[in-house]
Length: 180
Image (cartoon, rainbow, N blue to C red):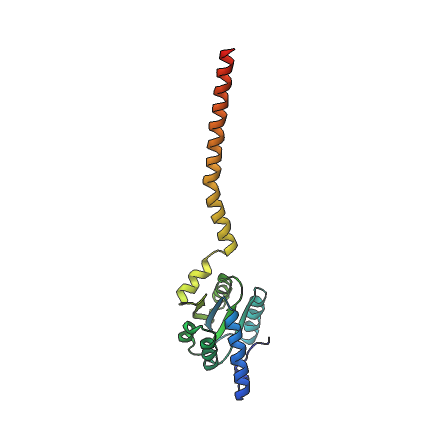
């Protein structure tokens, strides 16, 4: 799908198409963030879109009235309060931390981009929440850490049991030798 553009919403039919497209994006999204893109050049916006696209994330600019309508239709009412002023929408379809991580890294490099909030799996998060989410490791890393944490006591238990069995076997061997 092509990116929705602010200047291209002149006719009622086109507005309906934009709302339908945004509703579809919001319905499929695992996360949606709202940014203020004022101060970014067209080149910077294109760079941002390229970075996001490679990670299953889109950056969409649309009129707030249309974005509000689409958010309501997609059952993302929690996103509506964040839609104030010029808004760029970061819509992620994969892992929920990816859009936050990418947009916060871009915002750090380009001080003009700010995040006003968003919705992560149906729950509203403010700018501070987006920053915290961006600092989290990916789901795969968290699962690996959990597996390592769970595996450590089991490894220790296996080592202890092996030691007990070895001692027991040595004791039986010594007892057998003493009986002969």
